[in-house]
Length: 67
Image (cartoon, rainbow, N blue to C red; front, side, top):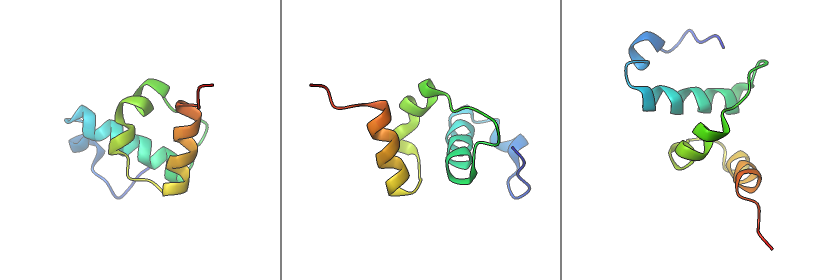
């Protein structure tokens, strides 16, 4: 993942903020061959600032309706 508008060296000092930022970037702008960490996605799901339709879709995948 290439990003020229964010100082990732400084952002990496705060692990939680970096992980949330990286998840948002991958979801919003494409995976570029990378995979999302299900563990991180579940852990930081409520903190993600992404498109509501994408968030609803991910929610249905992560927590399917139990019958």
